Amino acid sequence: MEVTEIKTGKLTAAQIEESFSDAKPGTAYATFTVRMKNGSMASIKELSTDVNATYGPDGREADPTDSYSDTAIDGTIVKGRAKTATYTFEIPAKWWGSVALEVQPYDNLGRDPVVFVGSIK
Image (cartoon, rainbow, N blue to C red):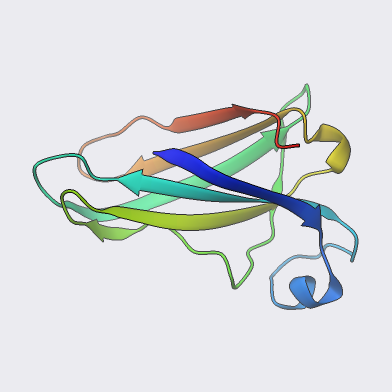
């Protein structure tokens, strides 16, 4: 599992309209692109993921925007193949230097969560 891209910006009225967010235009956000490759000898079936972001010294939980343009890693990943997904969270710009993203894959193998910690500036 890897974070392949991070985009930051401020939400526009159009972005908010296409999401389930209660944010106001100008709210800072971060979109994480996450890639999971299946390096095993068999397909990973019935996969789902739970993704959370926190920020700041107290690890405040970031609100997901639940944008229609976000995707998820789920279903089946055939051996040797990968799936990519995007997840967007409201993260104040002043805390872009202190962010953690936790991706918990759920399948029949009981995998541990993968955590990215660092700056997204």
